[in-house]
Image 1 (cartoon, rainbow, N blue to C red):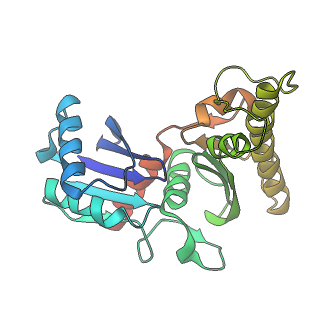
Image 2: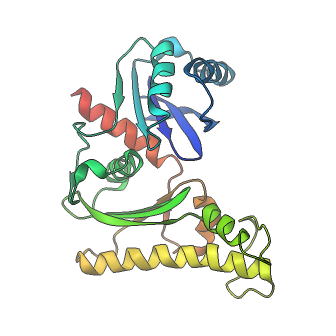
Length: 256
């Protein structure tokens, strides 16, 4: 089995793959105070609860966008598994070309999302990750990541509005009307509906400037993706485990 770990700014997601099947998923809150021993203990407990035998893990891949946590979690993985760990970063093969000014700046999560989307739906493809930040990236017909955009995420935007006088703390839940009739609904309309419109608008713009087919798939993932689905085009493909599947694809490529 392969153990894949995605360390994000808010949560740590992991998955145990047996061949192409995702047998179990793990989720931990990111805590800068935790030690490697604590992370190892938590992973062992969750694995036991989900009937995942750690001794059956034959490969480990790690993607992280939190550099301060990466070495701590890497030590936890090394304590649990007696196998090499593939860490996503410069020098690791991704399976696609990166057309950025500095390819080394590409985050591990965006690299994994692109790899996962190419593996699952092919290229071209546009990927939106509704996470702590909302990211939109475009991959052209030659599997080249051409660039994208980063915006404040849903939770981050609502929290920012909460800091203004007279604006309440509003959760991003429930049905959201585009035309708000009170302050909380107006805030949700702006952040949720506005975020969906911004992501879709960027996707359509990328199709035009990169001359991609209008039928280019739109794939979405991330913690807020399920809440945003109702406000996205009907043919949008929701892939909650896209990042983990991308980590698996990158790991396999680097084992060949």
